[in-house]
Image (cartoon, rainbow over all chains, first blue to last red; front, side, top):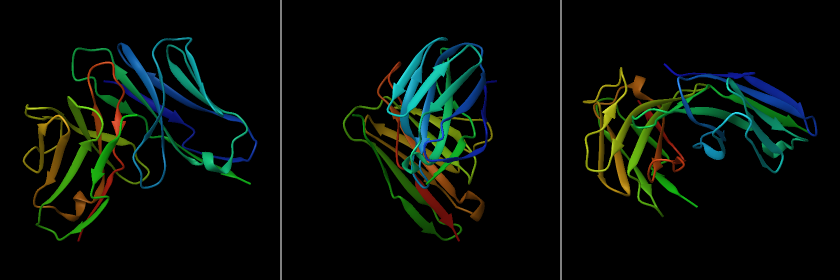
Length: 112
Length: 115
């Protein structure tokens, strides 16, 4: 069974203080690893999809990287508007409906 | 970009009644739709997967007679919570995908409170 573990559960940063969020996964065959941002009371908002080890993707202050066992979401010089829960999900490489298995998320708070 | 609309955003119902939640793909045809439930400070738990015109596939432990899913068209799926009880109170989120190897787009969620 797929397992996705995110750490830390919660992270408080000061504006401008860079950090990384971790997503460790166990899957028999990875089709894709997804990062989403979720604001309170809202659905997840797509950030990145990574497909193979060594792949990196960037968007504004966010950069996602992937290895064979984990993914990191690096946040450079965060701003208060980056405060949200960041979710990681894996899609297994099987012939089934390709569902996503989510981690429990990292709640990020960025203060002035 | 792909947009998924989910309604209502909030609903309060009395125990024993049924409530329907709609999920629409606005600018693409969704061959597959997914329904999730999320409890406070917990992750999204997949409830069921539905393909247009087919019966939904439910995850283990999800009562298919309680959570009725209909995916009658390529742009609309509905989740009906039947005979709702307070323990069904949760945040329900739908997701839609056009086809294999396409991204998953999520709705904005529905906060269900059963009193």
